[in-house]
Every structure is written in C-alpha cells, then in structure tokens.
Length: 141
Image (cartoon, rainbow, N blue to C red):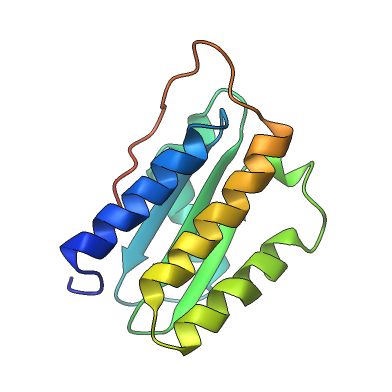
C-alpha cells in the first residue's frame, strides 16, 4: 500500500518510539483500504487482533485508518480510557483531521501519536525496566 513513503513510515515509527520512550504505554497504527461498517468497531477488532488488550497496564492506543473509505478511529484500552478526559479521543481526531483534509496523512498520524503519547506520559510514565510490549511498525492489512 503506497499511502506513506518509506521516509514517512520511518517518521511515524520514530514518533511512536519517541512517545513510548516517555511512557509504559503502547501505541500502534493500523491501516487498511476499506472498512466494512463502523470504524470504531473495526478498530476494536484490530485492537484485539494485534494483542493490544494484553498490555500489562491496559494502556495501549490504536490509531486505525481505512484509506479508501476515508474513515478513522482511535481506541484506547481500559487503563488509559479511565483517566483521559471524556472528549480527549474526539479532540485528537479533530486535530488529526486538519492534516488529513490538507492531504498530509503522515503528519495527521504523527499528531495523533504525539497527543496520545502526551496523555500516556502524564498517566503512565516510563518505569525502570519497562519494555516495549508491541511492535512499533505500522500494521498494514
């Protein structure tokens, strides 16, 4: 899938690595062409498929994007959802959408990563001995 150049994929991966260096949380990006049904439901399917519900502190965040259908969603596990403000994920989506509307998909994704990372850092700071529980690569389906 040619949505992101190799350089953009590296920038996204670096944004994930930078965010996760400051938190025990995990961030993943999931991209597919089409989304059958509701984007949030589809994100929840991939959240479990990618093992994100298995993190020790339940502080994983998945940013899901269906390119052809122009749908996206952000889903957090119970640990992070219990501490972020009620409108946080919608506010994050709105900020990402500003870049998407300009055709800058990579910067939109990086914005979502940065915002999620800031909240993860605030509520789930890095702990000694913390390990990266999930891949930082974009999951393409």
